[in-house]
Length: 280
Image (cartoon, rainbow, N blue to C red; front, side, top):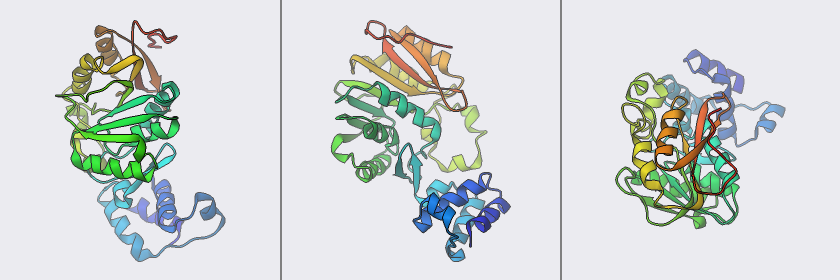
């Protein structure tokens, strides 16, 4: 089966981005780069591809079928124990990497696959990280990803329920892509998303449970001159920002590729820094 034929099969079973998925499948299964596939006609065994088509017909995410997904400049192992890394979350990493000082200590809360902390380590020098999640299964995936991406010696992993307790220590950068989907939004998600762990999506009735639990306490472990960076839902910037101001932070908002509010960076009011609160 050629890539074009696979795309046609995926389209026939209702896969929205059938061309993109066919390209990813061919790259993964053939072991060839996109350039190599473009230069030379390649065919894959239809007997190998048919089970993939059948699983996509049931709307199982391609990332789980392949067991690997791409994020920033790295590839990540994924299982149904972790959220699939998404392009929107890359902004959290690039924003943090721009701000972290050389040799800084990073805390990645709700780490899941580890993609936020690991990719941030890969983009920065001499940094170390603590990756935290409530799920032991997720931490096992994160551990494998740290090894896969060559940063296992620069990070530790701890199982904690961050709604109840935070790790000991002091951190120059506290990063988190917490659950922030509301209960009503969750009921309207695309079918593929229900294969992913619900706990990694839902942040309570209004989606703000984790921000309310974390922001009042994070100051105790934030180093002088450090910052906190959260991924947020596009409509949550004002609510999370006002909560941060109440607890002594100023904030700036960063927008994703679609110009949606996506990352909130918090700094203490008394920290000397050229940044200021910005809602524009």
